[in-house]
Image 1: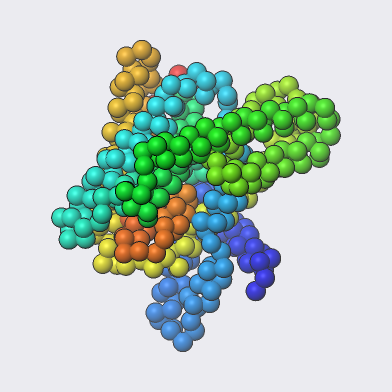
Image 2: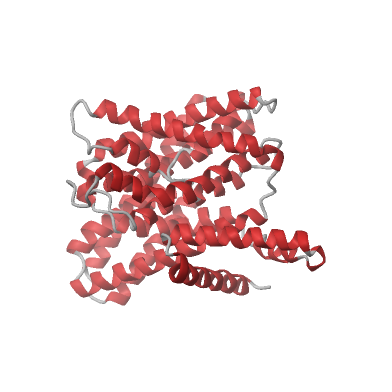
Length: 419
């Protein structure tokens, strides 16, 4: 089976599941696709148990194994999804709330990583699993950042006040870049051993990834805007934005810089300065429409793959209790990592009433966490990390994703509440 055949199957199933969701379930697109794909995966597993001779699950697994979710997402889809998400974010709203977004994306991620890592290490010791502390921190790093793809998908369906929407969107766009850098560092320490990695090396790696990615993204966005300013042809302008994403992300991967941070900053520059000053109204409409359609298509593909991933992740049901216990741990850590920065900043600025519960419950986890967990080398703790990761993502998308709109309505009240 060729890669084109696999792509045709994935896109075809995405279209069918999207149609089913639109026609009958009417759930938020990302939640609906994930839920239907997960349900279809469970049906395949059940069919394999009832009619083992058909080997349906084996056939489906053989197709899915050709798709490495980590490579597909982290070395491909994520660049387009982050750029498309940042392209539609109001830069002015982000600037006005830069301190809150910055605190949540940095201090919040680090605090959550430490809290989750410590709690998982303690719980694993009590349960007799004895997960090494550094590997518990690795799990904390991969599960702490909110997933921008999931968060932005839910924000499209929810009437969140603009102030909170900016915080949720900004945090999710930036904290996954920070989280991936922290995960990369901790994974290197876990694999190499703490004695083989110095503090200076850790600091250098962080600066290289985070600061280097930021510089690359700003430079790419500036160059793209200069190119867009001398063209008045929407097909060429779309090609320029597409080339900016692909070339910049490829350079980031080659130079070991943070591709996610580069994509977010390039998208913000082009989506605000470029759209406002370097494009005609016709070009602006075509470019934004193109990226909206591409965003929806890739979102559909991603959430279908996450739902189908249960067929190839070797989940150990003996770890079910530990996996379920991780859900409240992650939620409590999220609460603390949101409450602390907001309380620190509340001394000088006001926050929308209900900001904490909405930021906590609206901070969804998704494909990035699963992809990072899958990237961990095979070892004794990987099955436990996969089980914990998938349980949190499952709860996050299906439970939090389906109820965050109701929470907003309950906490904020009327959609006309102050924005």
